[in-house]
Length: 211
Ligand code: GTP
Ligand code: MG
Image 1: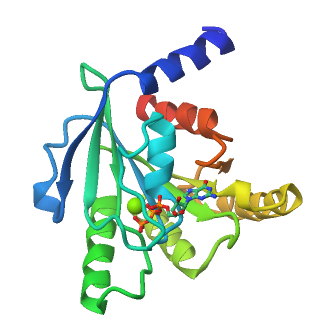
Image 2: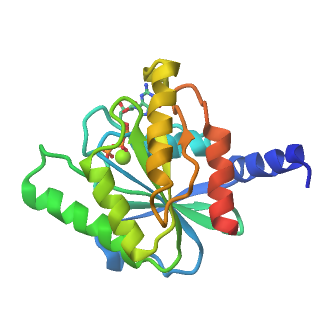
């Protein structure tokens, strides 16, 4: 396939049928593990739900909010008809305003899913370009390395940062990714606001599903 034909094929998948399947507040609510899954992980408010909407070109498919802690369950979306894979929007890490027991429950839910889901092809670990990598991100990376779960770092909200600053954060994240066994060596920079990097992200999702 030529590059152009490949780009077209990639776009076609994400402009075809995509539908909300279900919310799983606990692991036993998950659907049978019969198709590949790609999951969105990262700190609260990093832009997971927004990126899922940008990726699928559907505003409001996943619920977003200025208030951290919007997504509270594992939300699954079917892509393709016939079904070819699922996208999973997850609660964020490190939301301090919810009661500690609730924060703990979310963290366990997300970590148990990431470590134990047989059909999880790749986790996308989102990093806010304004903040760069933090303690929680490194903990999640270590956990994914230990569980041998393939993951990829994705910078979000690059429209909020000067281009020179984006390249600094990108370089730092890339250097760090390359030190981790289970991390993809290349980091993708995105903006759900401007659409920058969204085509690359689509290709990366398909690559994960097909790989
Ligand atoms: P939780 O579900 O609470 O963990 O948050 P989330 O990671 O799903 O973040 P969400 O997508 O709800 O976005 C949080 C806020 O960031 C919202 O106000 C979004 O509009 C904003 N946001 C997300 N992505 C971008 C982006 O690329 N650029 C800009 N400028 N704002 C963004
Ligand atoms: Mg969310």
